[in-house]
Image (cartoon, rainbow, N blue to C red):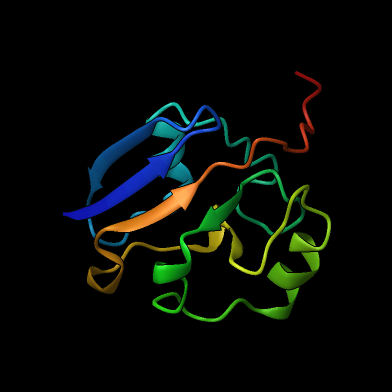
Length: 110
């Protein structure tokens, strides 16, 4: 199991465990985190934008150009921003911390 720590928009921290190979977006949604994922992982939106803790960022594989393009559209993007739909949990990511941005683009109008 891979441990993931979510820091919510209110600052509350939750730690969950997920099977290796799980997608971060699905794990976040199952935990009730407010990540929309409108395009269902097709990198056609930025509604699953998360901010990875700086100490964990270099453990991730580099973002592809399409992900970088989508991050350009994300509200509050930082140097350590990623799309949760592109992060697959591996043993190297055990203990990763991600922050849910306080602002997000709601493509479903909620």
